[in-house]
Image (cartoon, rainbow, N blue to C red):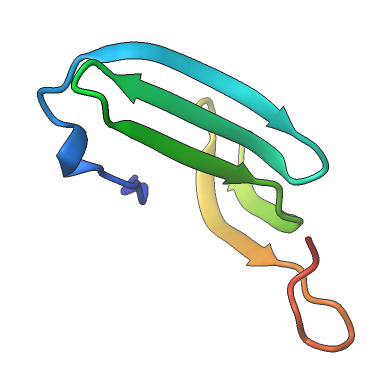
Length: 82
């Protein structure tokens, strides 16, 4: 399975001084990384409402996933529900 990811090449070969995860209700969490060269990285983990559905066959040993769906929910105005 090919999973999307975020790569930060500017952090390659750097040494982490501290790594902290902060709660930021009601929005989610922030990962804060301080590096020994004095730079910092902040990653916001946003809370989103989404529907994840899987259609699978599980009656013959290992699960066989037939279809997967992931949709972000929208309100009546057509904007994403946070």
